[in-house]
Structure formats: C-alpha cells, structure tokens
Length: 314
Image 1 (cartoon, rainbow, N blue to C red):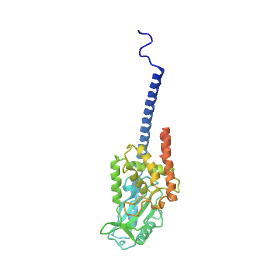
Image 2 (image 1 turned 120 degrees about the vertical axis):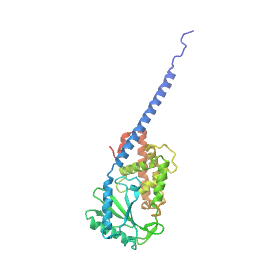
Image 3 (image 1 turned 180 degrees about the vertical axis):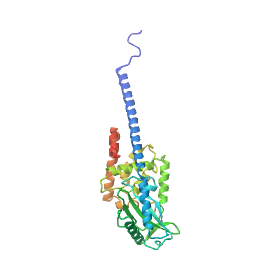
C-alpha cells in the first residue's frame, strides 16, 4: 500500500504545465502590447486634434475678404469641404477645400475660368505676401507661410443645386455636385464601426505622410474613399491598431482600380493616378504594401518603437 504510488507529478506533467504558463505569459504580453499600441495611437490622435485650427479659420476669413473686396455690397459664401468638413484633416497631407458659393452676384454670368482668374487676382492684390498658384481647371490654390494650403472651388447656384468647374472644359460648369452625399456615406460607415473610421483615416494619412517619398502622395479625398471601401462591410476587431492594419492592407490592392466619385465632381476620385493598373497606381500600391508589411512586422516583434516611427512620434 502506500509505496511509490500516489499523485506525484511526472516530467511530462511538468512539461505540460510549463507550456501552459508560457502560453499564458505570451497572451498577457500580447494583450499588454495591443493595449500599449492603441494607447500610442490615441495619443497621436490627440496631437492631430490639437493642431491650430484658429490659424486655418483666420486664413479663410482673409480669403473671403479678399474675394469680396470689389463686389461692393454683394458677397459670396464660403463652405468648408474636404477633410476639414469631414474631420479627417491632417496637417501636411489633407487639403483645406473651400466651396465658394456664388449666388446672385456679378460673377454668376462668368465662365469658371474667368471666376478662377478673378479669385487669383483679388487674392494676390489683397494678400501680396501669400503664395497664389496659377488657377487650375477646378480651383485656385493658396499656400501660407505656416504650410497651410487652401483650395478655393467656385460653385454657382442653379435651380437643382450647385455646380463647379468642369474637369473636362475650363469654360463650362459641371453637372450638379453633391459633396454632402459623400459626407453622409462616410458618416454611416463611421457609425457602423463605433466611430473609429474617421480617427483611423487620420492615422492612415499620418502614416502615409511619414513613409511615402516626397514625389508621391494620396489625396485626402482618395484616402477617405479607400477607407469607405475598406470598412463598408468590416467585421474585424474595432480597435485603432486592427483597423489601421486592415486599411493599409486593403488599400494597397484597392488603389490599383479607380474609385467612382460619389459627389459628381468628376468620374473618379483618383483620376490623378491614371487608368487601372497604371504605373503611378502600382507605385502607390507598392508603398502601401510596404507600409502594411511594416505594421505586420511590428506586431510580430511587438515593437512599439516601429509604431512610433510610423507615426513620426519618436
């Protein structure tokens, strides 16, 4: 009886316990790493949100006064478009787009080219120390010494809605544009993902700005459109880290094909990259693919330092 029997642990039992302990430690480390990364991303978002919007508003007010200077008592209305309106603005990447709503003024009978030339001339005259680029087909671009860049898009009011300059003919106005349609779609996708899509777009833009070469970029509107495509049917975990990883990976493939413009401003939101599988699209795709691979490598190594590099916060 007694003897060597009983409930002693064998070496195989101890090996099994060691594995369980190791697995528990790995899970704890993984959870801690994920929490730290999400905290890092939250801190980055706080920095982006703390940017000086007062300076942007001052620039906009100066531009409005410059445009209206020779219109006597007539006036134009300025309406935020682009990433400022959609709360995805990132300094150095996003455009500050302003729709200049022309309603019953002396400008209303002018062609888009004439209106753009008027805007550029007035701004140069009233703000001589501000850099004003020659008018493009759609907008006048103004760049301030603090790095803020503003694009003014004239829009005339018709019985059915507002029209902007045609992207095809600079002397013609476009079909009716509906920028609010895009804003509504982004809002719906953001709401379905617990309000995380808009913050993730900001993080995506910051990472793109950090890793892309200076001669290559994604427009703010394009980045937002890629996010809508990525999250419209998203079923993954709704954390900043997981969603940013997902956006980078899906965008690297989706960017190869043009995305239809929901606003009516042009045929596609990304015409600037050319046709499907163009050389420029493949360059952007490669950069996004490398970005996604860096994030995945950071996760494998549980490297906070790599995340800090990508967010420019080291």
